[in-house]
Length: 384
Length: 237
Ligand SMILES: Nc1ncnc2c1ncn2[C@@H]1O[C@H](COP(=O)(O)OP(=O)(O)O)[C@@H](O)[C@H]1O
Ligand SMILES: [Mg+2]
Figure 1 (cartoon, protein in one colour):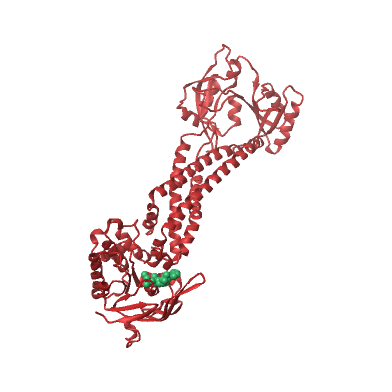
Figure 2 (cartoon, rainbow over the protein chains, first blue to last red):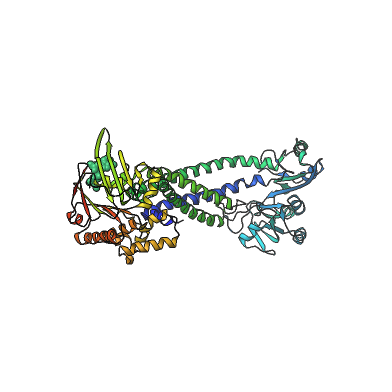
C-alpha cells in the first residue's frame, strides 16, 4: 500500500496516454459486460425446462397451428396428466418497439402447468371469473407501470376482431412473480376463449400444446404415443420434452455464443496490445529512473512488482469503469427491448470481469516488467 | 594515501584492495581501473578528481555497490560488498550508502518529500516514522518549505538539495556524490558544497565526491587523482 503513490505516479507521468489506454480498456469491458448479459439471457431457456413437460407442435413447424380439438384426444392418452395450450397473439402495445410475449391460454391448466408462476389465489379466481382478464409477469408490469385493474389495449397484427376492429382490450386481473430468479416474468397471458370467440377467422386453432406426463421417465413413450395418435390426421404432431426443444433452440444459440466469445477474444487481444504498448513505452522512458530506484536499494523483484502493479492498476481501473457502465446499460434494458426474458449482469460476471482485468494487467505488463527487472543499475544510470 | 601508514582497521570505513575493473564492448575489453588501492578513514571528505573517462564514476559505483569489480576486494564498514548477490547488494545500499547524482535524478512525478521518502519505503517504518525522517532530512538541507513542490518547480540547487536529503534520509555512514555541483552555477554549487561540508563536519558523514572543479575539491579534506585507471595523491589544501 505504501508504494501506491509511486505506482500511481507512474500512470500520471503521461496523463493523456494513460487516459487513452484507460478508455480503451473501459470500452472493452463495457462490451464484455454487455455481451455477458446477452450470453446469459440466451442460455437461460435451457435451464428452466421442466423434465415432466412435453411440447406438442405441428410436425412441420412451430409456426403451423394445431386444432384445439386435439386437447381432448391428448388428455385420453395414457400417461398424460395435464394438457395446456398456447396461441400466439403477437400484438403491439402502444408502439412497435414494446416487445413482450403475448399468449392466449386457458387460465386453469396454464397455472397448473407452470407452478413457477406465482399468482395469489384471489387473483387466480378473478382471472377465472373475468373473460377479458389477463395476467402479466412482474417485469413487464413494472416496465410499463401496470397495476391490477388497468385496461391494457393491444393492437392485433393478425387477429382482427369480429367487428373488424384491431384493438383488443384486456383487464389486468393479476401480476405474477417468478418462483426462482431465472423464471421468466415477461409474459402477458389472456384467455383463449376471449381470443377464439372474438377473432374474425382462424377459430379453433392453437399454436402448440404443453403436456405434463405423470411419470417423467415415460416422457419419451408418451411423446411417441401422442405422435402416433395424430399420425394420419390433417395436422400431424411432433412431441418432445421441453428440455429437448430448448436444447434444439440452444444449439442455434450456441453458434451465437461462439461468435460472442470470438468478438470478445479479438477485443481483449487488441487491448492487450494497447496496454502492453503503453507499459512498454512507459518503462522505456523511465530507464534512468528505474536505475535510480535500484541504486536506492530497490531489488530487481521489487521493480518488477512495481511495473506489474502499475499495469494491473491501469487495467483494473479501466475495467471497473467499463463494468460500471455496462451494468448501467444492462439495467436500462436489453437491446431487443424486452425479447430477452432475463437480461441482467450478475455479480459473478462482474468478478469474472475483474479477474480478466487482473490477468490482462499481468500479461500486458509482463514483458516491460521483465525488461525493467533485468536492467543493470550502473548501465541504467549511465543513460542520463 | 595509497601505501601510507595504515590507520587502525576499524577507523577505515572503505578499503579498496587490488581492484581491477574491465568492461567488455563486443570483442574489445576496456580496462578502466587496474591495481587500484584506496582506503578512506571514517569522517573523511574525499575529493576524487581526474579527466573525463578516467573511471571516477566507475570507482564510485564500486564503492556504492552499484557494480562489482572484475577482480579485487571492496570492503565497506568491514563487509566485502564485492561478494554480495544483487539482492543483498540492494538491501545493503538501502541501508549503508547515500547517492547523490550530477543531474539530481529525482522522479519528476513525485513531490520533494515523496522523492526523499523513496528509500524509506524499503525500511520497516510506519508512515509517521517515515514522515518524521523525511521532515528531518529536508530540514537539514534547508528545504522544509519546499516539501510539497515538484522537481520542476524547484531551482537546480534546490533539486540537488532534495537529492542530498534523499541520500541522507536513511542515515547512511557513507555519502557518494558524483559531480554534485557539475550542473549548477557557482552560487548554487557553493551552497551545495557548504552543505556537504557541514554534513561531514557536524554530522560525521564520510563523503566521497567526484569533481572536475578545483574550487570544489578545495573543500575536501583530501584529494585523490585518478588517471588512466590509477590513483595519484595530492596533499589537502
Ligand atoms: N557499463 C559500461 N560499459 C562499457 N564501458 C563503460 C561502462 N561504464 C564505463 N565505461 C567506460 O569506462 C570509462 C570510464 O567511465 P567513467 O567511470 O564513467 O568515467 P568518468 O566518470 O571518470 O568520466 C569510459 O571510457 C567509459 O566509456
Ligand atoms: Mg562520471
